[in-house]
Amino acid sequence: MILVTGGAGFIGGNFVLDYLANPKVSGLVNLDKLTYAGNPETLKSVEHDPRYHFIQGDIGNISLVSDLLEKFAITAIVNFAAESHVDRSILGPGEFIQTNVVGTFHLLEAVRAYWEKLPSGPKESFRFLHVSTDEVYGTLAPTDPAFSETNPYEPNSPYSASKAASDHLVRAWHHTYGLPVLTTNCSNNYGPYHFPEKLIPLVILNAINGKNLPIYGDGQQIRDWLYVKDHCSAIRRVLEKGQVGQTYNIGGWNEKTNLEVVRTICQILDSIQPKPHGSYADQITYVKDRPGHDRRYAIDASKIERELGWKPQETFDTGIRKTVEWYLSNTQWTQGVLSGNYQHWIDQQYANKTK
Ligand code: NAD
Ligand code: DAU
Image (cartoon, rainbow, N blue to C red; front, side, top):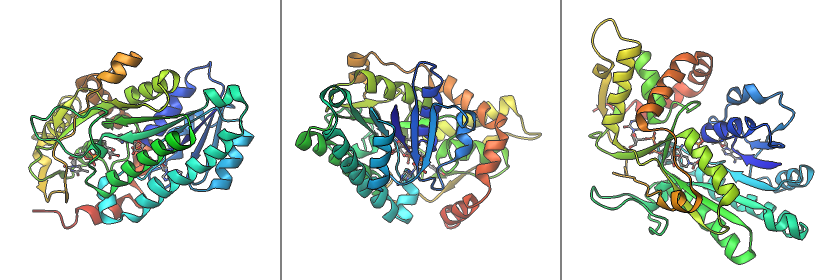
């Protein structure tokens, strides 16, 4: 029985669905606070699965986490729970420090107390897998080699600084207390159930709803895109085969400028759902840049490929087409997320950005 935190979010939700798709697994507990980013609708297909247990709560609640660990006899933890959006961290960093730093600290303390009391067999096989990001390494110049696990940490946003801090806590709990931890640092994910504050789902939904497609700055920033199901398979592999105390970079070798990504989405939409006149690319609008915007991220995934035999299944072309098709055919999910407080965020974020 594993404990997943943040399993109602984008990557955590995909992880829960993929994990339970395997009939051999015994079960999974999902602890999620259900912030604006947590969406029970994503998990509708498993809510009556007897192997699935959902608990609404905070990773920072030590007594709740301790009770769950005992009650379900947890054998491993995958920690997805975090505040994850860079633009929100710029407008309001407090929640990022609270969940990503203080929350991870409390989670580690609850887990340490539980793990220390386990009998030797379960104690040895127990794992705490911390899901982190490539953003902790900072930004790359155009000709720099991709980030490897030995790159120094140089975070530039409140979000990446809070994730870097959590990675350091996880590392310290291993070195000081012996907690059997694993850390993964992944590049940008995309795919189903992605909240439309992030570039790819925002552009797909804005395009089909006749709205502007906002490009920050000159649109030449580079991200390294990985289809979310490939990230989930990498996490499962690290959980099964990863060496305790090690970190693994995960990425899809898919470096693209933001403008390339947006143009590709427009081309796919032009071919499968053409507008009466013109192209979706006509909706592209350049807006003010993100403060402190990292220019380029790229992941060197050779360690996880070499040591654990993991490889992504999707190319960017296959993954992005699947993603666009998913957003076109899952209108119940998209209508749900576009209502409520979402519009408030869009107004706050984009109102003063027009150049
Ligand atoms: P998300 O924002 O979609 O989901 C986060 C989830 O965590 C939500 O369900 C939310 O309700 C929950 N949560 C937030 N605070 C909590 C708390 N205090 N206690 C319990 N639950 C809480 O995020 P995501 O994009 O799915 O990212 C998941 C993890 O992967 C994060 O740690 C993020 O840093 C990391 N990551 C994301 C990407 C990416 O491209 N999205 C890439 C690399 C790493
Ligand atoms: O690299 C991994 C990280 O990827 C994760 O750790 C984060 O949780 C995740 O949010 C993502 O961060 P980014 O800042 O790279 O993702 P985002 O989708 O917000 O932006 C992708 C790029 O697109 C970035 O260069 C900013 C740009 N952008 C974004 C938005 C929302 C725009 O040009 N216009 C926009 O409206």
